[in-house]
Length: 281
Image (tube, rainbow, N blue to C red; front, top):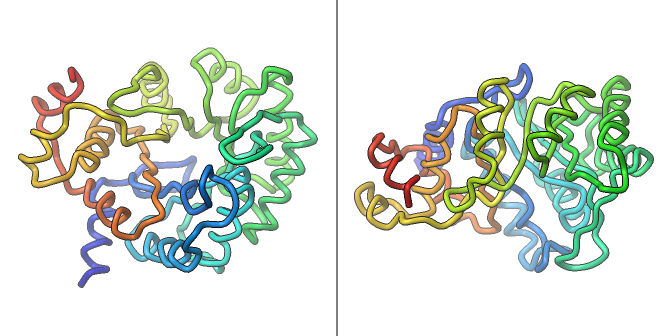
């Protein structure tokens, strides 16, 4: 019964397309299944492996990770927990950020590094082809066209199926789309940070998925949460789902209880007046 409830919750938000692949509109972000500062192994390794299995059992079929989470730890745990992967499960990863230490992130989008990063992710994830590979950031030292050009070559070699971008502005997205077919954008976006409203709307118009990171932003949510017998975090996710059909939230956690709570957001339907009230803050 518990798994059936989770399954209906995870799929209650409907579906979205990544290229020609359909996935549920509530995914799972796997950054938090690492140690403090997104560095090293998690404190509760067995718990994180169980969480990944629970996510799939609960109907999630889109898991987002990156080679820099750990680094490498998140990808390794995903493969350990879930390989051989069930049909329809999309593992999306990213390359272009390197980790000098805990809580430290530096761009490296040189073509040679991206090739090495992609091929290493393939090995860690035990895949022949990564369904969605995302350029994790824009490196000011490297022309965006050079970085994406290498991803296009990897795509032509069959190592990447689809290309996405992350942490890009509207002008950078336009440049990216002149080099490659971009199917998704992953930027920071939540109720309290809507600087990328334009990109959300571009994604909806151009049929790209918008994958908001840090989706549980703050806002005046308590009253609406009480009306729906929900938590503010669930309402924040429900608001994102209502914001645009292009939205694919990937709330992350290292807790099964928190995961279960997040998935229940798919069952919340905000009225137009509630949506506007939350948006106005």
